Image 1 (cartoon, rainbow, N blue to C red):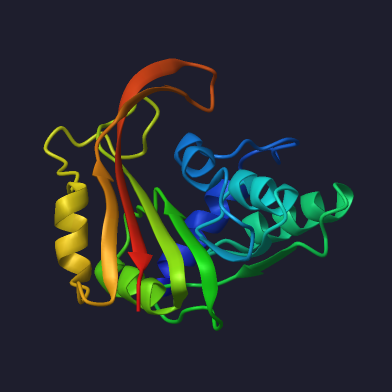
Image 2 (tube, rainbow, N blue to C red; image 1 turned 45 degrees about the vertical axis):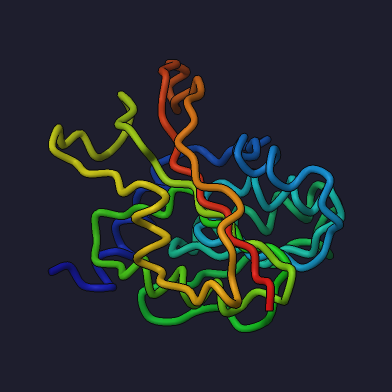
Length: 209
């Protein structure tokens, strides 16, 4: 098993080795899901380059953005300030293996929260569902296929379906309902500019009580 320290060191290295994104873009599954929703408090789990958090803030959301990499969080905080969104984005280093951000939220998104290190995703996503206000939504978007630029090129890799992810979270249907469980295709652009057809596993859960 890999330790938490190993995971932090790995992801710090990943982001430190990259040039900072000047204008990170939001994930397509986020924009198609959130457009039209009234803004509120959002939590971005694994904020990465920060495209989702910045886009949400521009729509009027108050965003708490967390990443295991302090480099990623610091860069996002700087981007938010330079874009005049400093009041709308709080970016912090957080290791979801050990703890979870405090507060209640109207939207929690977890895009491609995959890691080569130990992470009990079902527990993390269950805590996220419990952190929703009534009427709030949890959006989980996972890889459903291997992109040419993915760090995981294992031909035997299993990508759990949205139904499998929902079963793992194991929420009470009297309090949460699945609003979307699909595996759509899209054309993705990799960090080197290459394009490829990929599959997303999309799970949208709404707290009803």
